[in-house]
Figure (cartoon, rainbow, N blue to C red):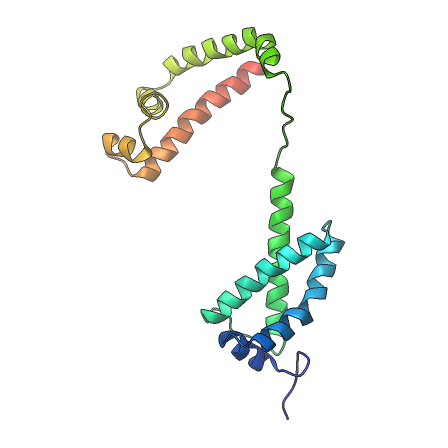
Length: 187
């Protein structure tokens, strides 16, 4: 006897329906799983719009993975758990990203603010120039080429006989050296 997992379809029928773009199968499965994921998102600081967006993204990932035969069910309800896990991970990623975003209020009188900070900006500029001279020759050359000569990472890599990734890493390290020195100075 056929075991039905979703309305009147088995998991195997749902998977085959998704592979074949059977709109009825896709609709049945889509609608049968939405409420669970919506409840999870609403219970975890989300709103109905977030739930719709996350569910749509998760369903597209599931659909693509089934089409590419990357999904292999381990039990009779694995597809539902798989979709739930994708949605949960996408929601957690969104929460994590939102937590790390910083909102900066634009200053309406930007020119006045710049004039007030001019001595501080000038002091910072002088400090950067002085500390730049204390960097190693390679760091100075990489930063000069990138910021002043506007060379691409590929051009810099070629000049030093590096890969592009090495050039990016070295530029990053040089900038970090300056940032660390600034942190030490301002403590």
